[in-house]
Image (cartoon, rainbow, N blue to C red):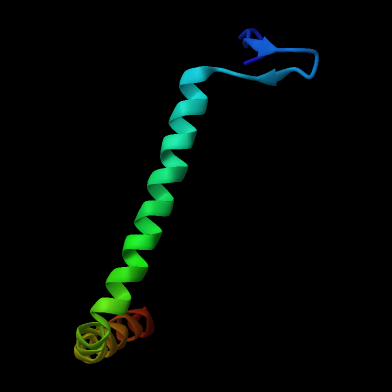
Length: 74
């Protein structure tokens, strides 16, 4: 990496690669959009989400029991 040369702007030596900056900005915006959509989905489908969680508790406990038995067998 020391042999690589980076394009820098100004005396502050801050990197200003337009492609990298644009890609990072796109990822941040996309992440914020997904966070908002996820929050809206949770609020809109709260009742259904609780049903799914309640339905999954039994399966989770069965899986946890199988894993604990497998560990205890060793």
